[in-house]
Figure 1 (tube, protein in one colour):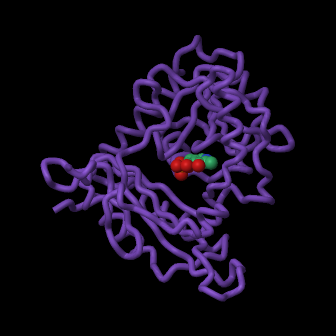
Figure 2: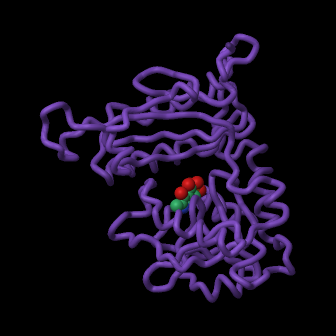
Figure 3: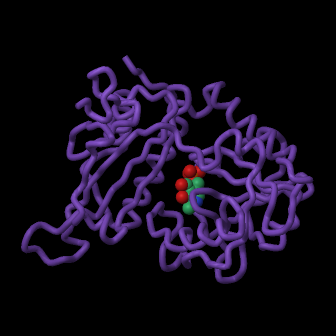
Length: 308
Ligand SMILES: Cc1ncc(COP(=O)(O)O)c(C=O)c1O
């Protein structure tokens, strides 16, 4: 029988390539130990960078954030930023993918046999993979705009789990997604304990009020797409402010959009029962979204990949 991921007898790499234990393997052969604390304790950090039309977008910024995450969680790897860049590039190159979602992960690993079960004793591990580009909302969905709720589930407090370090402790997001689906919405944003907007499962949140853009300053991952949005606003002469945002301000905004590596700039047309900009993506959200992808084509923050 033909291997399920083989095409015409050749291994099919189009579903992606992973880097595990120093080897590059097709995605369906990528396995880790189930005893790794990354798996059994969510004790890990990660980052996701994308490749668009054969070029990484802001690769150095993603690696820098990943390395900050490592330091923040007392994880260490015998890899420099350049080593990491080479590994993720090789994953993409071998996959042949021109549009790719590229993840790097460092797990706590396991303590050596007989050693105390303490995080300080664990041997940390590095994994990476490149798979086809992932959209939180597809371009067709983005053209219609997303419906979101302000979840009743509060975001995990930042002094318990620092949201600036990318992590898999997403129990709050998972509950919020169940709530969103039950209410007929596509996704959710979460508030902090003081009632201010934070972020949602995989994205930062922006409100447009009187032609000005606002995004939360705390309790969030400092998204690389968020940084790109702020740069685009500066280039386009659109005033942007990073500060506190209430749920009320979000519901009453002229426009709302979400931003993530997995999908770019994604317009919102409804927050709870409130319909925004007559139920269609707003003009500024559309303009920023268009510019975001146009700038990709112009080589903005791009690192081309040599697939040869
Ligand atoms: C919780 C959270 N907030 C925000 C983001 C957006 O970050 P970036 O733009 O770097 O992808 C992500 C991305 O995965 C995320 O998981």
